[in-house]
Length: 521
Ligand code: FRU
Image (tube, rainbow, N blue to C red; front, side, top):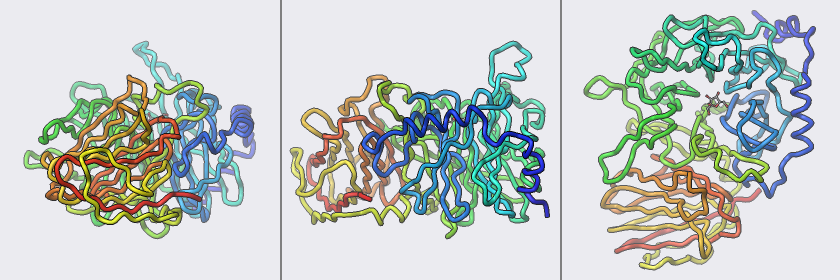
C-alpha cells in the first residue's frame, strides 16, 4: 500500500519545512493576537486580522481541526494564508500556528480555500487552491490563475509541508471549453472503494455553458485525473458556484455551494425573497450513482435548489463528518459583499457560525447547533407562557449578549416582535407575521454602515400562529433557528456590547414561552 508520509519525506526533505513568509506570519500572529474582549464569545474568530471561509474542517488524530482563510496583517482581505485551530468539541478552539502562507510561484497571490483528508498512514492531507498571476491570460486580460495543490502533515509531526509535485490539478486537466483560470475550492472525500475524490468549482463564461463543478479521482491523494462534470448550472444562477460540498445524508446526496452574483429571487409570499441579489448559499438534493449526480427536479425537469440560510450573513460553508457519523456544517458568518464596510480600527474581522448538525425531513435540509454547545448552557431562566402586550416589554431574567434562547410563540394573530442587543437607541428586530407566514430580520437600528443590507424577509411554514425559535446571541452576531431548524437566519451587527436588552411586543393576540441560558465557559 502506498504510504503518504513516505512519499512526502522522499519528496520534501530537501525543501525547507517552513518559509520566511510562514515564519513572518507566525511571528506576527503570536505578537499581535487579539484579546478575548475583542472577539465573539462562543463563535470562532481569527487569531488576529481577517477571516473568511472555513477550510479543512475535519476530525483528525483525536481532535476537530478547523483551518480558515486568513489575512493576519489587517482586518481586510489580502494575500490568503491558512490559519489553524483544534478543538475537542467544536465550540472551544485552541489556536495553533498558521499552516500555509503564499510562498510558492503557484500560490504567490494566495492560498485559497480547500479541504482535508485523513490518510491510511495517519497523515493529514490538505488540498487548497493556489492563486497566482502566471501563466498570463493569452487574451491579455489581467486574471488570476488558479490550481489545486497539496500540503501534508505526516503523523507525529507538526508541520504541513507543501508537496514538491504541486500543482496536482490545473486548468489543463479540465475538459475543453472550461475556463482554466477561475478554478478553485476543492472538496475532498474518500469513496467507498478507498479511492479519493475532489470536487472543484470553475467559472465558465462561455455563452452556451454555465459554471461547472468538476470531479477528479485519485488512488493515492497525489495523482489526480479528471472524472466528470458532476454538476453544471446551465441556468446561470450566479456566475460561479464557489466552495462546493458533496456528501451523503440519510439516503440522499446533498450538494451545497455558494453561487456568486445571483439575481434576487422573489417568493410568493408578499415582500419576501428566497434569495437576495448577491452571493448566496444553496443546496440541491439528489441521487449519486456510478459517479453521476441526478439532482431532484421539478415538473419541468429543472433541478430544485433552495437557500441554506435566510439571514444577512452566511457564506462558503464547509461540511465534515464527525466520528459518530453526524454531518456538521460550519459557515463564514458574513455576506462577502458587505465585508469591507467595517471600521479599520478593528483588529479582527470575521467569524464562523456555530457548527450545525444537518438532517433531512420532508425534502428539507434541517440545521441545528451541535449538541456540544449545550454543555456551555448556564443559569437557566424559564418564563412560562405569557401573553404579550402591544408595547415593548422586557421579561424578568431575559437579556444579555451571550445567550441561547428557546422561544415558543403560540396563537399569534397579527404580529410578534422581538428586539435584542437593544438599548435606548439601538436594536435588532425580528418580526413574525403569521398571516403572511413571514419573518423579517431588521438590523437598520443596530448602528450599521449604510452600505450594508439591513433587512430580509423570508417565508416560514404556516403553523397557524405558532412559531418556535432558538436564538443564539453572541456579542456581535445572532443565529436564529426557526421551527426546530427547518430554517436558519444568521447575521452580524456591531452594536456596542452595553446594549443588552431583549424586549417583546405583539400586535393583536400572542403568547410566548421562553427558556434562556447564559452561554459561558
Ligand atoms: C469564497 C472565496 C473562495 C476562495 C476564497 C478566497 O469566499 O472567494 O472561492 O477560495 O474565498 O479567500
